[in-house]
Length: 478
Image (cartoon, rainbow, N blue to C red):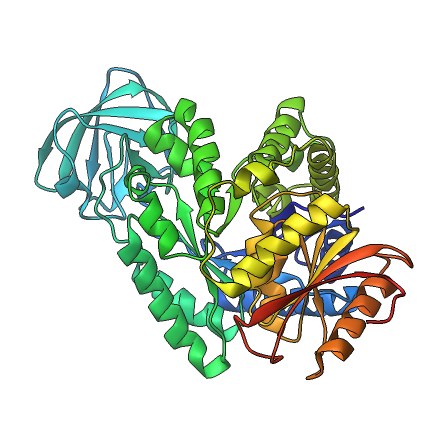
């Protein structure tokens, strides 16, 4: 069956072999995430090569996302590997401490004391440990433990409400961008951006590093800082898509605020013609269990019903026991949720104004296919923009985007309800349309007598040139 919602999966020790990765692609994997918080450049290079080879064997493109580590603010290391904090005890975070003990621990972000004042609340280890800042003396942050627990090496630190000044791009991120471009990745995910400037800088670095390889990756802003919420529209405007990164975001703004923020972010992204990925702990129990919990099933289904383009797996596929089964389960949930999704196309189009010809054709194709009950929409596209615009509205009519450009084909693997296919387009419009229909029929997406809505641009081969809409029945002479 045609599945509209895409699946992004992180690959790691549990999923890096060709055999497992091939099965993951067959199970429905659309985009592979390389997590640059772990592993070496050689690890990422080897995994990227394996992805490309497995995708070639599967006969379709699977995109690759490089996810940058960003300024992950962490405690340092302990002499004994960890300490246990008790409520009410004093504990010092010391930027100049080398090895921690039961009284203090070092910091990998040396400027943290400058960002804090008495009364601030620090959340460690994803919020499991809570410290109240009593005073700041030089390099030392003196705190009182409010919620205790075991604190081990390199656990993360967040300030409740956000406000830390660490830059979005570290020296490591800049080097990782160069590595990612040499691997030919299709997407770069930027961690902890606070504003449009962070995304614009990342794009400029990626474009410069990608120039020798002839690539310009799509840029994804991971929304995980409290400061990013009021700046969401400007971040959207400077990005190609966003990720609802619910882990660090929940620590900064509170767990209870995240579901409503998720819905808001997905809605704003679609209204801004950007794609959106929903991430973090979607199928967390399947790290160890062969089936998801009922709550996880509901979480994935609700993200689909919110209109997300993709749902993402992290440790479930990177280090879990059941990476293939997790993708199979996620795909089944997405399909079931999509069946019940209501189309509000007519309402979406009320009071809409289209100033571009290509965008008007895209919207006209959607409207026509929806009301005529067409079997499919087939878009001949160079850049993929036509398919992106169509994918912002839900119609239950699958969209097939045919392009001669490998980069466009891979980019469209993240667009909701879009199946990207390769087509070496002819310079003759009717020949190209005939070839497009033949490709869709040969892959079993349409049959003789089915109604299909086609969009194409003349002259052929120019991005942004879609200017023609055609309605045909498969088998009719074009």
